Image 1 (spheres, helix red, strand yellow):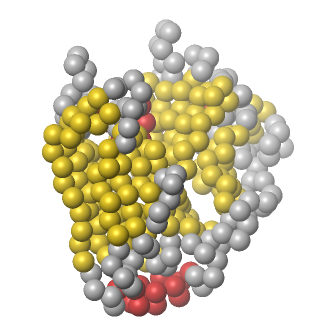
Image 2 (cartoon, one colour; image 1 turned 135 degrees about the horizontal axis):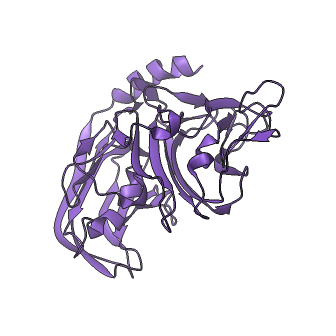
Length: 342
């Protein structure tokens, strides 16, 4: 069972010697037309390892509060991959911050930003068995940028999420998905792991923008986790409204916040030609969401009430709540998975 593996596997894994590794670089020039290799590391024979820390800073963009490195793209190539399984992730996005919001300082157990310009840091465990390559690249609209960056890791360190220890075969997936012009009452799928896959959701970020200048009624949408993916509606409800999932309520009426398990990093209710926009995150290290037989995770753009009971999230048909609009949705979900036999 999951409970058994959380203790026994940790002891066996930690018996091997612990050894730190890493690199730091200053004044490196990142380019849009190529990847800069920050780290290439091969694990010692008979060992495994995990990235445990990375950090980046750089100069501010002229005329604005943001730094160019806020938009730098990280890639982590695990065990000889030709295509990175973790990345490309924009720096701010990797910290579960939407719209590259530069607010600082703030911090939680996994991410933070402690400088007005850059200063992003990550304590995100990225496991690997043989090797890792870490690269940085600028997006096409920023041809070059000067950066300072560090990456560190440890050989034979147990893979932990809060108080939980995962199998040494656990691997991190960063699922980025976008729905452009998502219709009212349509579903946005965040992840879909096939039947037979065990794992754990680590954290979620959603950046939601009204595509037609509509109201915030899209926030009425519920969150559904189907375990296995073929489970019937409504699955496991992780929120009876968009803002319920990150532990808020009433359309985030207390304003932005950044806490240890959740936060609202951007909130613009919309005015004139400016669309309504919200971006928020939820971390699950204290509220673990395990699955043993696959996972499908969805959010709905607006929602309905059941005419018979007045309740939300229990039927796909019913009375539409308010006037939700067409939405542009971008999500990132960190998920650990491992082989079923682990």
